[in-house]
Length: 180
Image 1: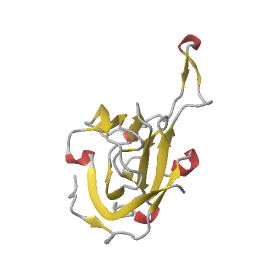
Image 2: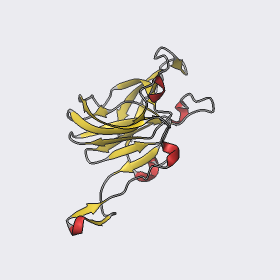
Image 3: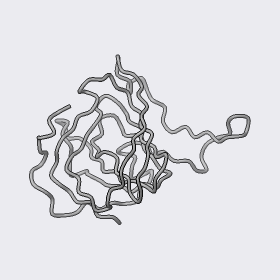
């Protein structure tokens, strides 16, 4: 982990970060939207519907790492919560899928050439309780923010137990503003 005491890009922004409903196209630069729907195919002798979301390439797996599956229990956050940090998993994609709750918010940012967050790309999305995501490898994002109710999430990533599994960086405080 990097120091959580570093600040990327100075003082708090006076402009709130608008939270927009997520769409597949809007989220594509940051990763893959995970949801069911009309896509998919029959499975299990016709008793289920299979939805393949993302096939992990060999490049998604760091040598010496193991596939870790966790359950996170997140407390409800107010929709106008301020964010003051981002994290990234430079060596792994990361799946986050709600198991319960009323919805969640996601704040994401691309990287600059030096690996720091490009805060000009900082974007916030609202997700329903039936939508999750897979973050691209190395994507800067804020931790899980449950909205409307406490929630549980299935989280999966490749980890080796070292500090390289998760980098954390303080950023200039941004208040979230629901609605696009």
